[in-house]
Image (cartoon, rainbow, N blue to C red; front, side, top):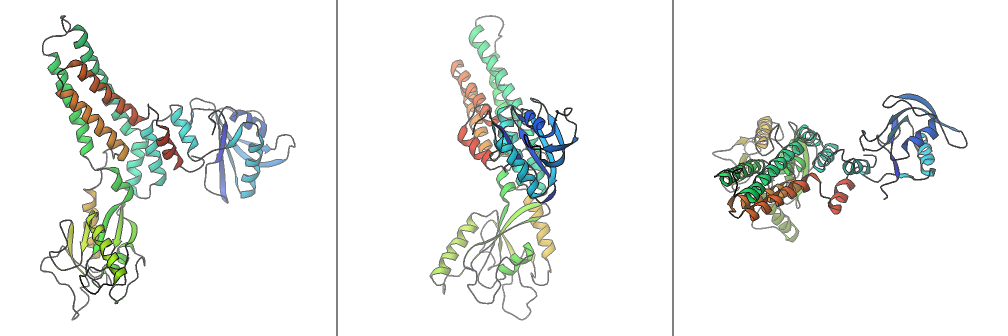
Length: 431
């Protein structure tokens, strides 16, 4: 990969389609547009052009073309777009012509966004938000991602960074002019209070629900003894045949995970092997161990077993209430009584799940920190706490410097190449 190359890629859906958009970015983007379609059109205005192969003049397609001179573009470079007819042969023909042009190559995954980051068109937090937006499947994920991509967290971090700079300036003033009248008595106390207030604000952000549950889904485990109705309930919740249902004990031997969106919130429901202490052969016993591990790591357990044995994160569910005169688990106090076969009580269970899940997810308007952002903000809060406690002004100034460096890293102002490769490599080609 060479940063000076001009890159191109199909940036719309895979053909065949009504339209196919090929994006070109780099120093020769304008030259490519001229070679294919004649003179450059006016910036940011779509123009209909015949696109012909350079040299042979063969007509490739009749398409809309757009020209975006840098640096005020999505990538910070000269940028061109070809809005072609969406047939596979058309796309292949245009890509073949571009490949033969000197200095041109097919873009790598995420390279357009990476260039936008490197050219200062977006910071790292915004790029992470864009990545989440591309993979968003639920309304909650979309709302959180678009806030991140539009710079909501970045603006807050910039504000914190500016506050750290101002506090650092106050400490420097105390160091340089502590024997003069410019800095009055008690200035050190005021600076310490300012640092403590900033640490408290960042601590509040750290205490909010994280982005992992929003991205991966609320993990709900269905657990209980064999034949308690777990698999039937799973299928009813996800509205498809995700698990095999049978009256034979031990049918489910491994974890069966089924993601689904309920009320715009992502869930991952997990069916588990029936829990029993006796009668399980070797493979079923392994499944029972995995079931117990899944229960320990769940956000919530729907417990279909004997009352009071589900654990602290469980809801007591009385299932199979349609089965009259048949031996089943009854409960004196159940959060929900349901029949997965008839649907009785199922709507109330789903509504309760959605309401409870909202308390585990970031509230609308809050910033949802991912693991990297949470780690760095934790380091920043620790540095600020050290600065608050420190009475030596030199050590206080050093702690504030470390806090500022961490905030710079959060926004990507200090480059970490391995992390950038991992982030942008997850993007699709053409983005």
